[in-house]
Amino acid sequence: MFSPLDILYIVLAFCVLWFTAALFWLIWQAATMLRHINDAVSEGREVLHKVEAALTGIRERFESATSSMGVVVQLAAKGMEYWMDKKVGKGKKKLKE
Image (cartoon, rainbow, N blue to C red; front, side):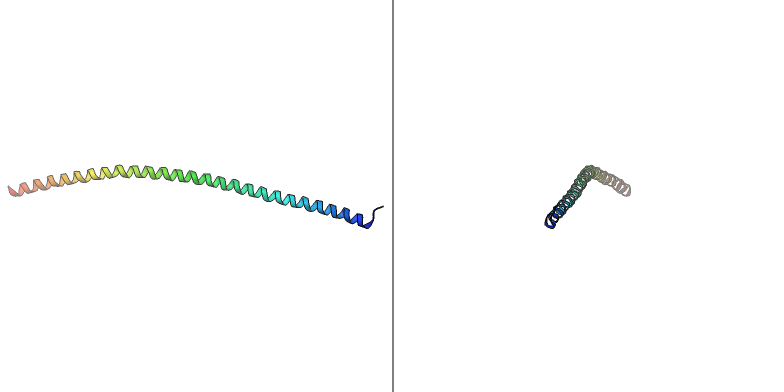
């Protein structure tokens, strides 16, 4: 009924079929893994953008606070200078009298 060559061809056809199925499964698994890696990288980028935005906001608040503090420090220095001039001026007047 079947010659040995026909049986060999049938067996080889099944082997090619199983090899193709295994190769397809392997490619599918690799593609799925790469998709998961791509999703993880995208989420990581989103987190980094949020962290960058937060740090930028903190830096801007710090810069605005330090600029207003500079004005306060200058005013305090001028006030202390004025106060010291007044105090030294009164001390000189007392010494002259």
